[in-house]
Length: 97
Image (cartoon, rainbow, N blue to C red; front, side, top):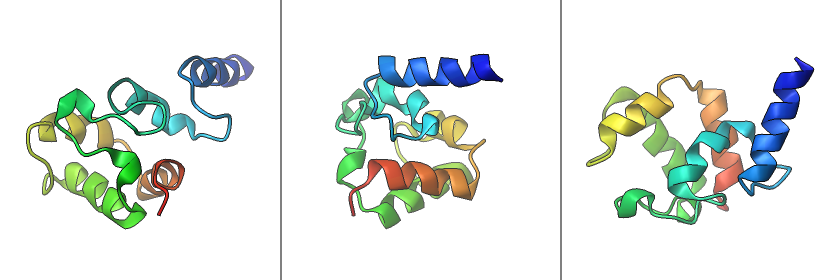
């Protein structure tokens, strides 16, 4: 377990994410940026600018297939294993409102 914890800490630091970030966001960094500042593949909204309510609605919509356009299938796979509590945790980290 200590090895896993160290790996998460190292991955978090290498990705440039704040020490207060949720490890759940690490898989999002490549496309959305360390602070949610990027438009993923120049197709998505900039998630740091979304309200917490809108972010959660989008994530749940990706999960149930009711939200999204070009990246719908890709995001459904990313969001599917997340619980509502984990989605809330990511939203609390990435959104400002």
